[in-house]
Image: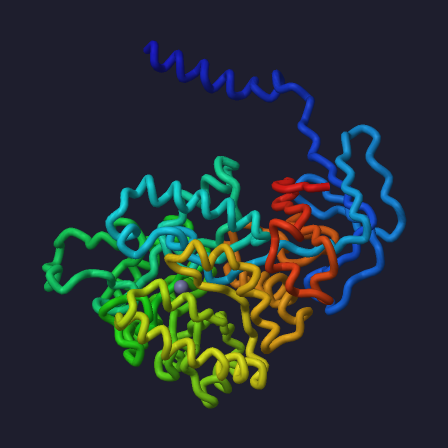
Length: 448
Ligand SMILES: [Zn+2]
């Protein structure tokens, strides 16, 4: 009876609550960038001098004419001095949980320690001007939540959750002594962490995909072929069957999103495309015919100009280092094919187990000027990458326009001390050259 009376009271208080609510709504902050030239993410040249008003988390107004400050609201003015305002950078192949630790630390380290490491790295990622990352595998949901809640500074994260792989595939980090696995046996360390899940039939694939979607994945990542970093997966192998890949695609599409696969070889890529995969990660060993197929099907290629240092994350003489060399040798041809076949190409880095390399994030982007103009390079890392993010459909965790500076877009902005189209190397030194870093309308850095 007491409980019932209490429940009634709670309900009544709930109904009355709006009447007691104070009318003072918190007005969104206004930030006015004055006298800036725009690289808007789409156009290959800078605009004339403009003024840009950000209200809350949105770019509200862009105008050649001075924008009057709203008298009722405190407005933070940033005197741009003719510097360049551009969209925050986007990395489409990131592993927020795997940048700082070594492989051994990842597999054996304390989970709290790994998360704190990833939080510190996320802050550094944002301070390098990367305001969004698409995380292509790893237990990143907690980090994403902490960032979104403002507990730790970091980029927006489009999470894939655990990489889904087959027994022996790229992402199966088990040692031979752990085999055979009896049905119902405890999960391996990688699975317990949520870093990689092993699935060996269409039904198992469906279950693992749905688990990631339930956890909040915005897209799904499978490994369709061998990989560099895992010890038991030769580069030439194709892993999932077409039926297994199709099961993943079906489960993802039922949730309004898509599957991206790790694949280097023509066979792995072709099979994935036949199964309905929408994005190929890497593709470094593709051939002419496969490039033509990717282009014809309108499939995305999310590829990387891997630097040689990445191979050094693996011990000298190791199989992993050897495999890295084989893949890296394909970089030149992959970009050449992507350009010639006009493949929709996204930029990402796939930095793994190397904080040193991560610190050169901007340089990894600037490296693309070997194949693209500086403007094309910057467009790829902003508006083009954002277009691929859009494939997440209703699973997009940050609905709104990213990767562009235009009215109505989300306010992820960098103020660059100079013209990054004329001098792309400016992005190699963000500490010096990015004088303002804004994400979601919030200033994380303002040196002016
Ligand atoms: Zn990767």
